[in-house]
Image (cartoon, rainbow, N blue to C red; front, side, top):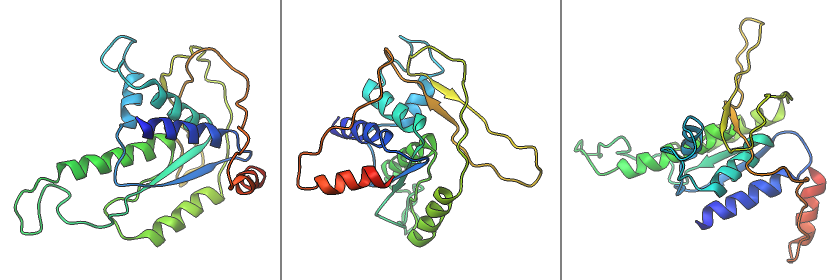
Length: 204
């Protein structure tokens, strides 16, 4: 569960940075958890089928979805053959795990409002799209009226009246858990990268 704890800490730190939308480029072949488990958990009552979801994972996605932190997973393997279960020679291969890994990366992107680059070598196009999405955007604030701090996933939809417009927005957010606390404090840097750490905090 090192990934979950580290990811939660990163999302918590990112939530303290000033600014509007924040982007995290996450380079990995896979993640050991499924973001959709948190979404599905919101459809079940506590003690039900999805009650075993790691609470740190719920907290991590709560930090991300409530603080405009979009995660953009990039699979460094690029374009590979046989992802759909068929190998290069046409035989059915054991690539279900690769497909599952890419679904996991895509789920993390979708839940946080980013997109995943998997089974593709078009890194230039993906980076251009990422810059485009994070250069021009609107931030909308609202009160959902939901007060229970139970880690549930709350769906939302953004619609516009003008015809011909395409809206890209997050599909929901994860409620925080437990009692409400004050704003998180940024821990003081204690490494040789202290200057860089402080510079990032001031630049955003």
